[in-house]
Length: 465
Image 1 (cartoon, rainbow, N blue to C red):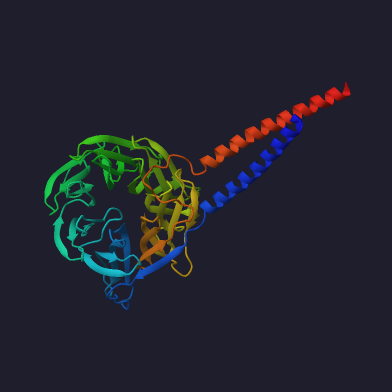
Image 2 (cartoon, rainbow, N blue to C red; image 1 turned 180 degrees about the vertical axis):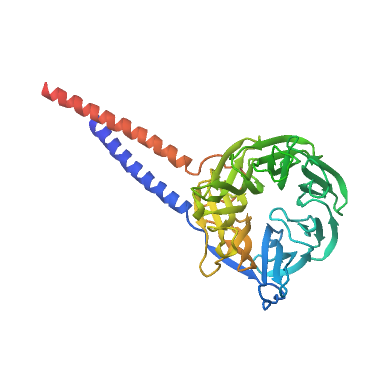
């Protein structure tokens, strides 16, 4: 076979390979953006039902914090709120809380009470003996220990509002804000170490800088021992100053500083407003929440995610609303088995108006690009909120919150193309390999076609001579 025919054949094969790879690439992108399939959606009505005949009465129960338990089921820290008017008097409000143990199919196993509602993040953990520890918020602050059957073992009161994790020596770490009731002139993050019986072992107060105002939002354990605390910071000694910035602290197992970073995400009032932090497999962090943005004549809230590297540097920060009509926020976000992010929150033009709220669920890639989005699911929920989401051991998505003012829990099957999490970090873009192959094929094809043209022109030139 002549060299001309060989080059022409190579060019033809290259074009065919390029076409096939492009089609497979499009198929991969389409599969990667498939919506997850709903396995079940459960509502847990108030028990006993509240008196709904009181004029102006309103009752609401919400799932605030969710974990998967060691037996494959779930535990939810729930808040309850009621408001009503007695005759012509002023409004009366009452708050409470409880935890629920749920089996793997979403059926309630037991429920046990808390003195007041839990916070939205790190409000419940499972202990080594399969019991549970839950923290509760205003108007009382403290923690309560339950056994595996929901029986109360002990309760402890502390001054700040609390978030918590289990330490590596059978104790627990609590974090809050030191200035709420302690009378400190300079507010800071208060970290408390307690033993398995709730007795305080030590406590530390951490400040970003002095003078400064901080607000603690979440605490997580980090590899190698120690803890990371996330919140907001402003260069003011006045609480709730007009401009806030993100603050991240790493401490060792004794509560001593190892990292102290602040991030100027946006120079706008009250921005950002972080809700939760989770740890990624590479030792970094995902932070979820909202940004207050200024539109044309109207301020609005945007869901917001940020990825922070293990060394504390900001890798990326992204907002997900373009205007008032997209106003919403994220309450929780975790890493998925393929290195992406599963985030849940609230959607609606006014996400703080109960009549306009809807649960918001999204999946992104590792760079924050949206792969799929759910804001409603006909026949299963309409108005409501999503406050906590997890990815289970088998890659399923589970979310809790409230639908029609009752606690809600739903499970979605994993997408078929997501590989199981083997514990190894995902260090490349999902389409990196396909892109590299396409680039190589294009280069080879271009060289083959170029040589074919060159030989063809040379032959024509010879024939003319």
